[in-house]
Length: 400
Image (cartoon, rainbow, N blue to C red; front, side, top):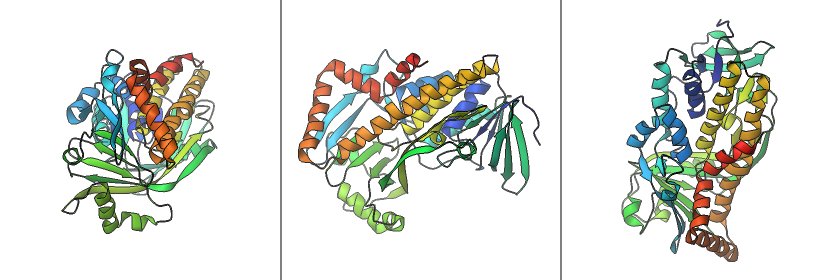
């Protein structure tokens, strides 16, 4: 048994839990980070880092490492599948607003690796792997987590506070009886990674492209070594059919015909949810990232929003650790829940609506709106400020 109230417990060592842990230990606060897996996630998950996320990570000395290992994208596009570029958004307009006026395409595992090293090298950080949280609770003085490791050994960890960053199926969220309100999008999303060189095949293609089509929209995202292709699927099709190699080849050939079979490096299919927990806080227990909110990936706001949760939460928890009243944490919930609903979820749904518009009149109206936006420098800058998540962060200061 780990029996003390001298540390913060964090459940879940994805990017959100890792950033929360790194932020707290950088302030001299001891943290025990509990993670089910042994090696942390190494697969191809999120890949887009927005400018303010890099600004936050820069304070931990992590951002430059990622920039060196990633692909700098100074613009991104909305395209029509048949006619080509509809609007190209210029992120250099963010110069002076951020140290990083670009999107960075860099695999999530590179962030995970850098943060793990940071935590394991820090005297106040303890990473406990191969250990799953089974039950959590709290009293007036602190919190506890009952765990079981991969060998079946049970343990109990105690701390002063608990952060649940344990994903969409969060044990921590369920423990505080929070409702995960929202909806599930009907279609399964299919994500394929290939080394096919789309930039040589499709004229004027940016490294980040949202491609509208009434029959089948798609998203193309480039990393240093691969292109990632995001496609919707027929809700009536089984996951086995969706992932079948012949179907995968058919889908990729429909994106761009190739004389040779596509080399598929990685593939995954998943249901997409739009949900926000009705509360982020219960006493000494706090939710962050996917444990608090999930959204569709159109806009790259999921991981970024979760990291912003972690930074905001760590800042306020540091103040409480050093003597501020516990109700200081209420502002974390008010600020970050507002962003999850009004910015992250709203932008992701708007992007999906543009891509998925089947009515020709509606689709052309979306196109005209996008063209008008990029033609006006002030509207253009306002759009990239919002879509890069800078505006939402600044507006949080107005939330008491």
